[in-house]
Length: 188
Ligand SMILES: Cc1cc2nc3c(=O)[nH]c(=O)nc-3n(C[C@H](O)[C@H](O)[C@H](O)COP(=O)(O)O)c2cc1C
Image (cartoon, rainbow, N blue to C red; front, side):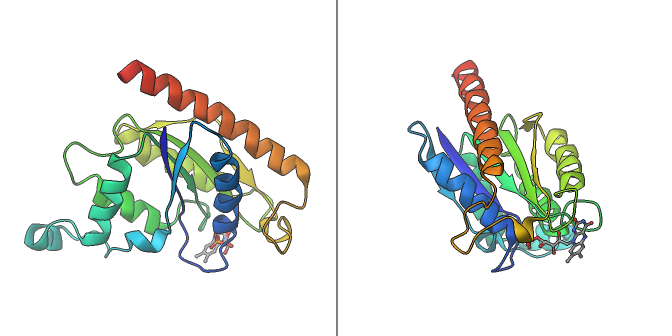
C-alpha cells in the first residue's frame, strides 16, 4: 500500500517533523508500506480565494497536494495545535484540495498524530482536523497519537527518549495499516 505522510508545519525545527520522521522510520520497516514522505513546503499555496480560483484555477501547490493524495491509499498527518485547533495552513490546504471533483480525500483512510510542547500533545487540533476531513469523505482512524511535552521527547538524533512513546506509536501505526488494508481490499 502507498501511504502519504507529512507534518503540517513549515518550521525547519518542527516537533511535528520529528514525530513524522519517527513514524516514517517505523512505516518504512513495514514490508507492505511504500511511503511517500512529503515536506509540507511542497504544497505551499495562497489562502483560499474564490476569485483567484475562478481566474487561475487551483494553484500549483494545491494541484501537487491533490496528485499526491490521489496516488496514495492513505495518509498519516502530524499536525501542530494552534490556539486550541488545527493550523490554518492545513485547513487551507484541505479547502483547496476539496475544490476538485472527485475530492481526493474521499474514502481515504487518514491517521492523525500530533506533537506539542504543552501537556495535551495537540489532541484538540487532532479533534478539529477530524471534522473537515470526515465532511469531505475521509475515513479518519478513530484513535490518534498525541505527544505532550514534545520539546523534551526527542534525543539529538531525533529518536524518542522514552521507549513507551515509540511502542505506543508503533502499535497505532500497525493498527492503522490493517485498517487501510481492510478498506483497500473492500474497494478492489
Ligand atoms: C499561533 C500559535 C498558537 C499556538 N497554540 C497552541 C495551543 O493551542 N496548544 C498548544 O499545545 N500549543 C500551541 N502553540 C505552540 C505550538 O504547539 C508549538 O509552537 C509547536 O512547536 C508547533 O509545532 P511545530 O513544532 O511542529 O512547528 C501555538 C503556537 C503558535 C505559533
